[in-house]
Image (cartoon, rainbow, N blue to C red):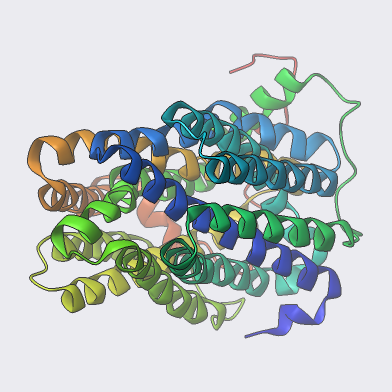
Length: 425
């Protein structure tokens, strides 16, 4: 299950992912706690998460274009250094007592902008540091680490905020980005495709990527399965501070636990996927069943009569969510040619923008109906979406035929290879 770790560059990539992703989850806890403590408003809590998400939608696809045209490693290192600066600036404002609500929103937008540039490049580097025969295992382990940080990050942030204050949480995040940057800079991407910065225009590269996705039914179906449930359900995490303070009266530590438990379930789910062999079929059950279970578990969480029962449902949320997401991402890597990987991954990673953007709608819904009813509605819509997609969309059912040992790029179509200057859509 850990065979990808025999590659030194992959170990460096994974170590940087561990620290960087942990810091980002800590930032979500700290920022949510900070804005709710300053305003007591569920609406502003959702709004600040949406503000952080907007750049991911605005600049995310541009980040994918850059990842396919230029140096991916340098792109990641620069982004991590920018995160370091942003965290230290926010910590200084907190310590000086000069922090205002508008500054929380501005730094949220800047943090989202940096993430939009970083994420496509980082995800695209995975096939550059492991041979193809270890790609499934590498993607699954990376997914496991990312989901493990959902436990590590919120738990650390909850303790740090409760014990020494939110300012020190941002200092610690800055230090984590510093080490992540150092490790990433030591990587050697010997299998990275030659950058294509000299060919065509950035806009041509962008439209070429859209044509590739549109002409490849497998990639398109996998992207729909990845993004729509995230829009409908993942914004539940923005309402966790409301559950922690008003439903269970558990404070910052309770918030950290509620955010951490799905991470535990996610690690278990990722370990299960990592043990699948390269010849195992990409079962529709893992995708549709996982999405359905994810939504129904959220309904259970919303109406849980006690804190322990809520944690049990959140464990299922994490397990089901990461099971379908890990299989989905692995299949997407294997169905995508190297030359288009950054642009496809940037589309896939729109989930990081769509989920917090959905937090605004979740905040409005919670303000009108209350947090429990809002989360229940979101979960039920997600389960119904999965069932309807399986029943009525044939390309989704056909995903059962895609195998983990399928050669990369085997599903590409000639239409995707047209000149970037022709017919932009």
